Structure formats: C-alpha cells, structure tokens
Amino acid sequence: MDKTIKPIEHLRGETELPGDKSISHRTVLIGGISKGKTTVKNFLQAEDCLHTVSAFRAMGIDIDIRDKNVSIRGGGLKGLKKPEKKLYLGNSGTTMRILPGILAGQDFKVELTGDASLSKRPMDRIIAPLREMGACIHSQNRNGCPPLTVGGGRIKPIEHSTRVASAQVKSCILFAGLYADGVTSVTEPFMSRDHTERMLEFAGAKISRKNLTVSVKGKCPLQGKEFIVPGDPSGAAFFIAGAALLEGSDVTLRGVGLNPTRTGFLTALRKMGARITVLNKKEAVEPYGDIRVRSGPLKALTIEKKDVPLLIDEVPILAVLATQAKGTTVIKGIGELRVKETDRIFSITENLRLMNADIRADGDTLVINGRKKRFAKATLNSFKDHRTAMSMAVAALFADGDCKIKDTACVNTSFPEFFNLLEHLK
Ligand code: S3P
Image 1 (tube, rainbow, N blue to C red):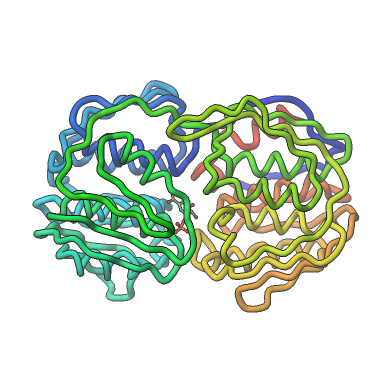
Image 2: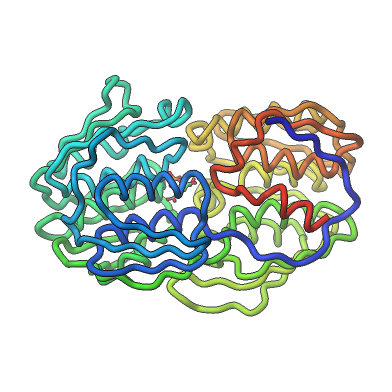
C-alpha cells in the first residue's frame, strides 16, 4: 500500500498515544510466566506485540484481549507447554531476541521463524550467552539468523558483558537467569532501556543494579500484577518532530512514557532549541506525563555513541529534523542501525537525498548539513520498515509538493493508528 502525503502548514491539537511497544511485549513475556492473573491497561495492539501474544497462546497461556485491556493467566516460570507448530514471529525482533531467554528454562524444543527482514537479523548475540548458560539453541541455517531452534537445559548463572548496548540481549539473559541456580549478571558498554529490570522487579524478581550491571537471582517465582502501559515515546517522536519543524505548531501528547532510558530524543531536541514542556509527570513503575511541543528555530547538535541507546529508534526522525537545523549535526556510533528492521542508515540517507537534503553516512556516523528549506517533493521508499515510513511521512509534511511513500502497511508493526493521528493533528 502506497500513501500520498500532502504538505501542510502546521500541526495542532492534543492526543493520547497508543501503548509503548517495548513495555507491551514485556507485559506478555512476564505475565505468561507469572503465577495468577496479570492485567494490562493501554496494551499496544500492533502486529509485533500480537506476535508475542500468539506465541504465548500457542504455548498454552490464556490471554484475553478487549480493546487495549489484556488479561493473562500465567502458569508460573515453568508453566508453558510445547506448541504444536513452529512459532511465527513476523517482523518482531524483540520477541525473537527475548523469548529464547524464557524458552531456555522450559523442558521442550521450539522453532522460531520470522518474515524476510527478521530472518536477516543477527541472533548470535543471544545464541552465545544462552549456550553458555546451558540452553540448546541454534540458527537453523547456521548463519546466526532466524529460524532458530531453542530447547531448554539445566540453566546455570553467568556473568556476561555485551559487546553492544542492547536491551533485547540484556533482557534475554535476565529472563534466562530466572531459571538459573544463582545470580546472573549482564554488563553493558552503555545504558540501554531498562523496562525488563523495572517490570520484573515489580512482578517479584530479585533484581539488583550497579552502574552498568544488572543482576537477577534465579528460581524466584513471579506474581501476576497490573501493568499500566504509558504512551509510546518512540511513536510520540514523530509528532514531536513534526510540531518542532512546522512553524505555528502547538501539539500536546498525553500520557507519554518518560522512563529516563527512553527520553534521549527529548533531550536532543531541547539542545536543538525546540520548545518542549513536560506537564503532569507521574512516577510509576514506568513514569509518564504530557508533552507539549511548539515550533521554533532549530540548531545542529552532536550525538555521542554513549547517548545513542537512549534514542536508538528515534535516529531516523532526528536525522529528518537535523536537515532543517542550522549547522552541521553529527550522530556518532549508530552501527546498530544497520541491523534494525532495515539498514536505517541507508534508508534515511537515500530518502532524504531524494528530497534534496545534505546528508551522508561516514561508517557508523551520520553527518547532516542543515538549512531551513522545504524538502523537494519525491517518491520515497519505506523499505518495508515502520520507522523509516513514519519518518518520511513527517518529512513529507514539510515538502514543496505531494510525496508518495511506498509500502506503508509496515506502520502496523508498531503504530497502526499513525496516519489517523496525523490527520487528527493537521
Ligand atoms: C527494544 C530494544 C531496542 C529497540 C527495539 C526494541 C526492546 O533494540 O531498537 O525497537 O524492546 O528491548 P536493541 O536493544 O537491540 O538496540
């Protein structure tokens, strides 16, 4: 499905955001192995999270979805059953990378498959530590990518240092650590999102944290709880960027997640000079609040490698904004973008160049020479990647004519309501 986007003057109004994708996945991952009932409010009903739901249903877990409310009847740490078929996880890297941590502790073997994009994504980063813990896991094509076969084993604790900061890898090892006799630790080079630690602790796991190391004590049961999923800050980023860019904009986004490991984009925008106010901040397992954004002149900035995990999914939309900021923006240490749903360094430079922007990739660094000027209209390619599609839709709002974006059905991966909300804020 292609989409034509017409340029507009500004974005205005208020809206709530659909639930956070990372947190929604984790409510099912945790609820499925907790004892008793887990209830979830504001669950994200997008394809990725629904793949996690189907996987748990196929393993015997009763999950009831009513609009954004979900209830899960967990069977405890070892309460999953062998599924009758392979588990198909679609485009969901989060499910493919975290679920094996839980499967490592079960007494059966499962095959995990995904779509063409997921089948190219590196899994050796979870295969190696899970094997070290005693799980039986391999890439069926011996290329380090899905399909994977995962079987449980006698899980022993490890102390693992990850080469890249990845919440998915960290989470996988922490979940496997729930099944180990003793304490499992993960140390990252830089801090990545910490939803797993927060949510596992809330469900009763024994978690401790020191600097860049998180540890979990194995064999402690989890209890069903109520999770309230805040609005997705990565989804909010598209409207925040649109409002920062288009003169005369004034947008308020209600109930957006403000976990400090996810607010790197807000920090970056403030440094660029965007007018952002956070209102009604509430502390909770996952803090949230309202974000008001008004347009204003933007200036360039430099993002260092250590700050990248805090805005990893927002780099494409940040690049769009940087093309319109005064000066040269440099985004360093973004090699991980090459192995996301598509190579996002390529997808974003390719598309923005078609729109006459001055952007180049230098290894794992993006260099963007900004100037405030409407983009040239163009036909853009989503590369079937949801965040590329939505980033280009926002850029197209600030073009000098209609832009066509190819293959936009991919937005359903994380944000089925995206185009409706965009209409609402026009
Ligand atoms: C996610 C972590 C990030 C992010 C992805 C979701 C998660 O990936 O890009 O969209 O839910 O843990 P990495 O941790 O692998 O960088």
